[in-house]
Image (cartoon, rainbow, N blue to C red; front, side, top):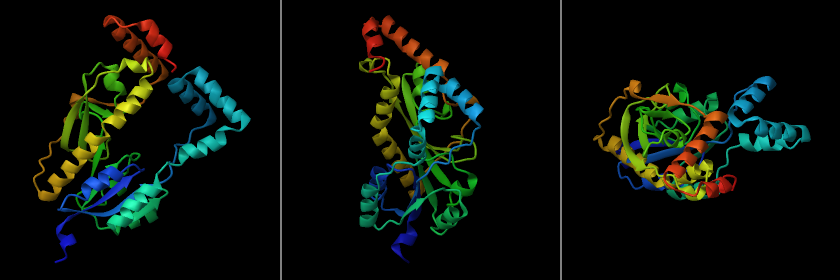
Length: 289
């Protein structure tokens, strides 16, 4: 029997940034990476002009909406919109790694097209590994024999959906969870394979620019995510995995914060700083850094 046939055949579905994960998976003796499928374009939901304006005001506020309209009128937004629909992938590093490792690499415009689904089915994978994609339909995540597992930066079932870290910060949580779970139709509700907690301490060197703090925090826990996904894959491969079903009544699915909630987080951070005896005037000056 071919040695590869004894291994767990996995495929990775990603929008990019999976190189470190691939390197880690390749070290597992019982795992064979049968392919990497990179989706290269976002298919945005279609909204009418009025609904677009209403959503922009709701989530970003009037000032940001006026700037968007100004860009649209000046013609600068069309190129920007195209760039936002195209997913940025560092192809050189990924292609070098897959060629050196003999891993088939496929770039797909849309995971849910008939051509993409047929291509993924031909990989005959045992397990799908979801690494930073949009929400997938069952027609995709159920293709592998065992289904697919996903990495979620949140402590499921308490924090499902997103955006990661924002709501934990908003609610004053002392930590953020990282969860590997099987994928089901409802977002972040599948059986938990493994998870861990990471301390969450806001760094006031960012002032009130919580967006930059969150972005850097998420980058900082990327190593934890790789480690946890690797451990989960290894446990599935060697048969030692013990999943547990989620009781979704214990938590909720979060969604994008609206403008008022974003402003409220800044007020909350300012109050916490004041209560801790920090120089709040200095923090206000750093707000738009």
